[in-house]
Every structure is written in structure tokens, then in C-alpha cells.
Image (cartoon, rainbow, N blue to C red; front, side, top):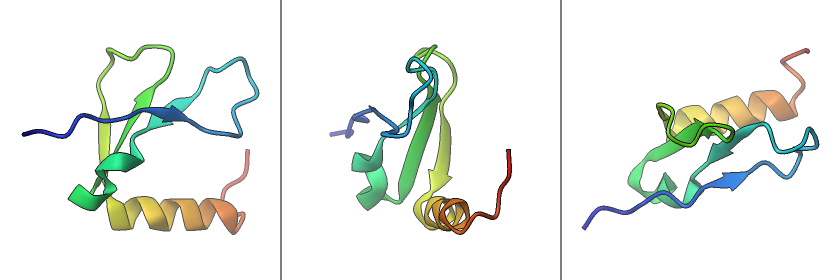
Amino acid sequence: MTTQPRWTKSSYSSNGGECVEIATNLAPHGTIPVRDSKDPNSPTLTFDTSAWKAFVASLKAGNFTA
């Protein structure tokens, strides 16, 4: 049986809901799928769980600027 992604938007989304969605329920399978919330039928990017954790840690550390 294939596990289907359960999509959630960021709690920081304050721009009318136009953001990305992630499916953390697939983390136990080693992946984090990401998609555009405005177009749920668009291609999905899939990241390795460890790469996603490193990305989020970098965001929290302020390593990216707008």
C-alpha cells in the first residue's frame, strides 16, 4: 500500500494562502514532498528528510535573506 501525502501549509503563511505545502507524514519513509499550494496538480518536489531538516535549520538560523 502506498502512503498518500497529507498536505499542510506553513503556519507562517500570511499572504492569502499562496505558499508551499509540505507532507511531513512521509518523513518516516525518508522523504518530504513539497508543492505549490496555488496549483496542487503541479509537479511535486521531493527532498530527502535529512536535507529538509538541514534546510529548515538554516532558515531558523537566519542564513537566508529576502
